Image (cartoon, rainbow, N blue to C red):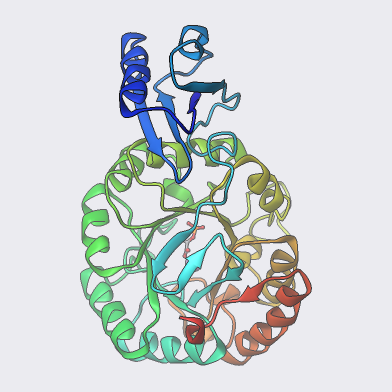
Length: 344
Ligand code: PEP
Ligand code: MN
């Protein structure tokens, strides 16, 4: 439930509404705006009766949020939330940032080469996992803290923002020391303890859709983060597992406009994991921009055939450079712009 105050409401009027919400056994969340203040009621999972609040002095109207996710919903906040992970790298506005880099940080030489390549092609953020959630315990698990240090060096050399994954509560604190945005991977989309931990932090979060998660479940997971106080959340469509083995996942382009209708949070697309097949990445990246995605996450490796993870879906540098050129025209056709480091 959202209580919209009148423009003329006094601080005492707002406090009276907060008190009434507390008396109902819920938590008030006052949100002062440029013109007027709204007070959210959080903590309910079913409809509450706010008729007595409607009658309090200074109250303009009471809006009932019908969706199970509250703070994440468009009903709660109509304007897009802008998520800025580094100066000039903002998701949810007219500019569309591209995050690119290898699946994993593998060595200094590899991540530096990747960073320079993706920067030259026009990416504004570098990705690369230092902590890797691998299906097999015998697969490369990532370089850990050493990988984070290499990402920091790549940032210092190129100015690219850093996006990298945290797999657990302890890792989230560590990753936040190095990264501009903490990635929560598909396998952890419903790790509620981790979601609450990053919700209590101030670092932006990129939350990937779980392998079999519905759009509603994705938004409910985001709600965990917002409910702890961090609204700097970027959602990411990365495909869902289906019956069809012809691609690694089924990339759900549908989810982009669906989420944009339901939520004010930005949603980006990851056609690399969404397809799992290199030759399908560029077509789906182009389609995602055309569909209105607020950003892209693309795996690019200086030498994909030698990659320690996800080589089959990683673009060769040249492919990525060509793709970025195409994306510029597609974005322009729908009145958007691919973000560049020059626009900072
Ligand atoms: C990744 O981004 O490399 C990754 C592991 O992605 P996902 O969690 O979507 O599988
Ligand atoms: Mn990967």
